[in-house]
Length: 218
Ligand SMILES: NC(=O)c1ccc[n+]([C@@H]2O[C@H](COP(=O)([O-])OP(=O)(O)OC[C@H]3O[C@@H](n4cnc5c(N)ncnc54)[C@H](OP(=O)(O)O)[C@@H]3O)[C@@H](O)[C@H]2O)c1
Image 1 (cartoon, rainbow, N blue to C red):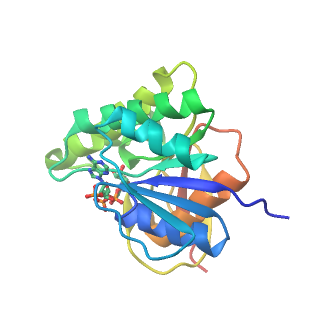
Image 2 (cartoon, protein in one colour):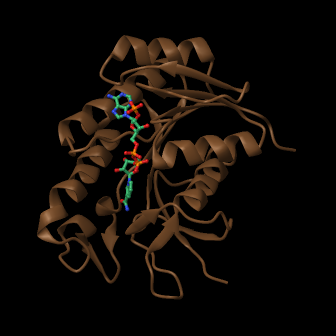
Image 3 (spheres, rainbow, N blue to C red):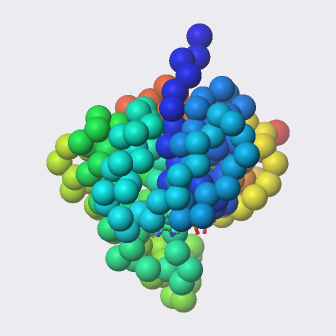
């Protein structure tokens, strides 16, 4: 039987965060929705305005909610790599202090290239053109921040190359630290199915700290 949890989502209004909240609610979990301008009318969702740059506010919101897990799904436009690293560090510190598991929805750039394990996707021009390399490299810095944390209980979920809104099919394949492609040759998943994978991992934690997923066509 599924045990209902309290799941905090930082980046609640974003593409990923909003889908994670929907999936968590479908499964009956309570949700703490955190962002600077959170909006949610579901009575089982507690919305709190928090800027991740405010370490005390992040810690306070997580402590007050007695969250079992926190999903980090923030980003800025334009991309600010230092913001991403600082936000990750803030959440890891608070979660470690409170004994909360962290699931980071990170970047595909931190994955190894299929067939060339020594080459990260962010450094592989076959996947990442020069103009978006900085964005892809930010995901590597975020993963390294997790790996360098001495005490936090974290898992880093790299999406496939393409992540965008789409249907919720529940069909995905899971891997560890190498970019996956489906049988149709696409490295793709909908944000809805990524949220399915997030909740699956939170409900039944796997053994790996760096994981990835891809949509499996019928
Ligand atoms: N293929 C890939 O590798 C791929 C593709 C897409 C996304 N991603 C990753 O997935 C994650 C989520 O991306 P997304 O597309 O869902 O982002 P998004 O739609 O741009 O949403 C960003 C979220 O961050 C929140 N936020 C921004 N600044 C904040 C701050 N200072 N304090 C608190 N909250 C803040 C925003 O809410 P407010 O404005 O209300 O604060 C919003 O909820 C990111 O790590 C991104 O890099 C990876």
